[in-house]
Length: 325
Image 1: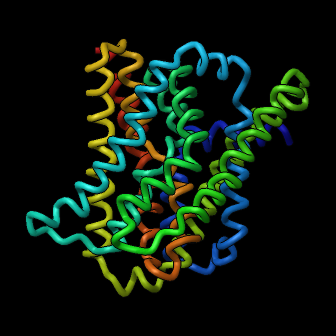
Image 2: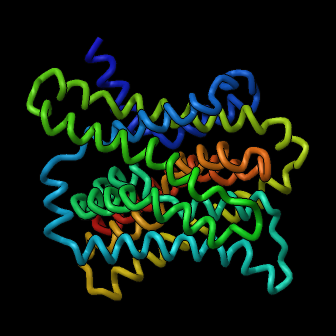
């Protein structure tokens, strides 16, 4: 049984993006599959995903945070400034030149931009021979700051579009991110040397990918009928904005690394960390706090869930290809 779970975990880690896309397509055809994923269930699934992240954190990772404060500070500041501002410019800012973006796309992409770095960014940094310790440090720092930074940034950038419950968002992020990450870290600290615990860690990626698939499936089930009503143009608009937001995040992240004289490995890492957001968290927050005022805001978050994994894999492969050449 363990060998099967381990192989499944390895396969899902390798083909995360394609698995998420497959689940999204199947759910679009059969929307009843994930109608059970909503509300508290959705939050619990995200909490479990964050727990799996916490289980990978060690004291060495905490030492990295302490030993490299300047690098982590630069990376985290880039995370919480570049992506929110790029989202604002792509949606609200373009309105000043006559391009009107639908309100759900504005709210959804700003929410994605204000979230911390995604857990899969650590895997991408490893694949492209980046600085993995730096990647884990940035993800950890941005996740720890998310309960404060995400609600404040969303309130500031999207507050005029919809009513934002900043306090409720703060408490929600605290419960579904910081608490499970902390539990996972302390569990690893006290039980990390036990063989049974190591085996559990090895198969956790499979469950975290399955959890992410459930969240995306749940979102598609919830908005299926409304998405059909909006039509292809709305979906293409969402994808175009997600694509630009994600790509500009990679580009500006790499540029920041070059500006501060980072090594090639660090430049790759900060590029991926800035460009890849925790879109799963954005999806849950959109479903929880904008379900009434702006229900279709979950669509940009759900599309980002799939696309960030795909683009991250493409970018990591391209970086590795440059090394070979």
